Image (cartoon, rainbow, N blue to C red; front, side, top):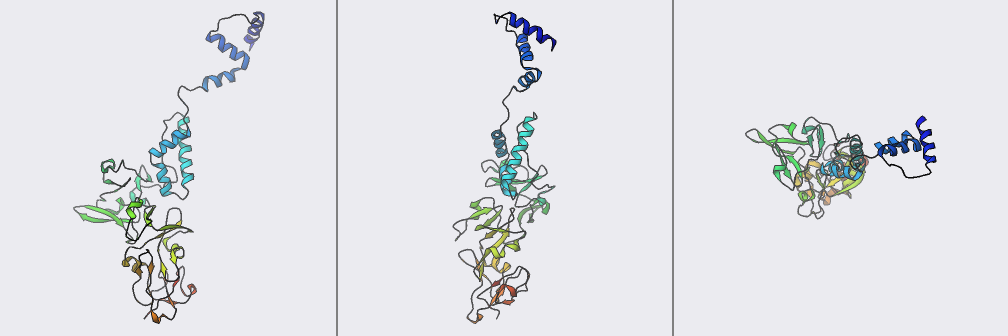
Length: 321
């Protein structure tokens, strides 16, 4: 810049004497001493407000219940959480308010019917909708508060208003209640929903009451039979959760066991106090067992799993009379 040379000579001639420190002279010193890029960095790099932080976005995601939805809906909650916080930071640094929005990990939906694990369709995405301090009024419309989560209170006689794996059971005058399609699947929103006699460690795992979660991959409930089998003659009720891992649920009644398993003796499978289904033994069994009935006809005798079809397994200590 041509003006900088004369300004520098004048500054040297002054010998460092006193001079007016006006805004213009300060700007000129910056321009001549460091160049225009440095000036732009000083001017643009000092915003009026504090820069958005990762902690601020994480708090926004917690307030919007996005972190809970990540844990409930996605196979990799940590990745989902990081994506939500990162997107919040990008929007905030672009001048938008600090706000957390659902990520692409949440299933897109048109109605509650498209949402798994008891979640609700909100703003076109399946989400766990939080309610305030157990207050039913904090859940709008046909929703009500159950624990810390909003659920459907009245499905209005339409299955479309219920989450996936639920159907609308009529309750008269055009109203209805969402109930599980599978009677063996006990729905829940928190561990306290799963408290039952004989179950000393209840857990609610993505909307299903379960005894424990085993590290076995699955795509369907039927894949979980090997993981949930207890010895040769007993098994728990297996379900496949959102993470593609098996959940082994406790039985609560003989009807649940009879619906899932068959015994070679013709007797109904029993629900034992420890939460497992078991075929009652028979002195005439001769050591043989019975195949489970996912892909094998009922009352099929077996000695080993090889005698059963597909994924079915041989339950020992039972016979068909």
